[in-house]
Length: 272
Image 1 (cartoon, rainbow, N blue to C red):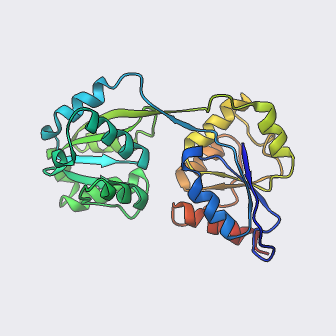
Image 2 (image 1 turned 120 degrees about the vertical axis):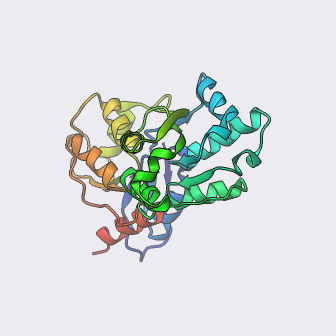
């Protein structure tokens, strides 16, 4: 657990402590954005990104990229682990030249461009329903989805709406695990409980997994007690719905599902 303290005293989050549950390796942007508004930030990751024990399915998919029409990346993590494995298999980004590439979210698209990969589609809505609708429009109608072979490399456990919707439209979809999300090693329930009750004003969740993992840590399906009197912020409606499943009242959700927008929404909530 790491604490960062803001120095300025005339910003909307001055004197407020925000707990962020994002993976430590991906927390820097969020810390910086909250710091711009004067927040003291506690990094308490409830999620850790880990390597797969077995890459057989991903390796097989990489070896048969010629058989796909579309490659859909749902996160930066999916991009990083896919291209790490691609390189280990002795291949490069030219293997993707004949594929259409869809990126969910601007950060995912930017990471792909960093690998010199063309991005054909970035849906305006950063969730599965919006991706399906954008794909249908791109190919000229949902009836044309049935002609497609689609590869989705992603976390070993993730939401199933998109692949199921595509399959129902007739597409052949291979969902291949590229990495694992889990509770961080050594995360201690007692320390987390003490931190939450010791002056935290807001807790921010950036994915459904961060909510579920916190509930797993506390061995409960009701997070309202350990998070009593703490304002709950969620990055988007999927994460918000998961929080509600664990009996949380969500006070903050930005219109755009991005880290800068979430930080700005937290600042707006507390500015008065």
